[in-house]
Image (tube, rainbow, N blue to C red; front, top):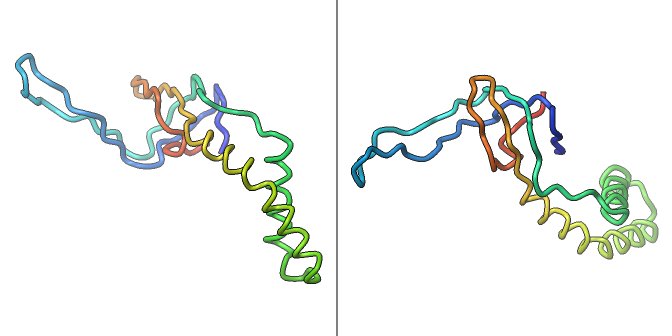
Length: 124
């Protein structure tokens, strides 16, 4: 999923956020919990890398194999699998980089969620 600034999103799951501490050490006074379904607007996306040609080619070939591989002649399927295997390191590097993508979202209730992983949000 690709999020971009200005896009409306919804929190996909309940989210518990830390403990609120009182003046004295160890004096916990509360815990903030945001319910799934709260909506907001993406203000910023951090750590997003554009897809390289190799990544797009991996996605295209993988989709081709998944959709039509069972109907291909064995030699064609073998060649396609070899091409996909050659592109897997670039795909893995892109996926790893994508795991570091975080967003800043201003929720409709006024709270700001910053540094949140993009997977907890669903685009509207």
